[in-house]
Length: 141
Image (cartoon, rainbow, N blue to C red; front, side):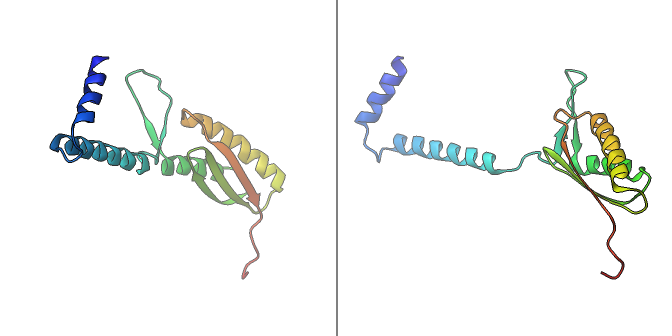
């Protein structure tokens, strides 16, 4: 590659305060700074990529929308009083409060409903499920 040899020869002969050397260094520094900025910015982290059914169509689902869908599905389970859902990039954290059924029965029903709902979201990487079912606290405490 003769261009590399020519470039090395030119750089060896030019002094460091030459205009072309300083311009090349400034361009390289600006490009490096731009790459650092791109690496640090979050991008589209709020979107979860969905499976592509057609090669020309790309779709994404907001994490808040996915959390709302999962929350609505869990609220349909008998015995669930309240639910908090947080969908992250790799995991869906679900915290449910059950008030009149056995916790094991509620946990089994919620797990079944959530597995079906997560599959129904159509995501490329379905989040793993982190489920916690508990009883409500005492009133006044």
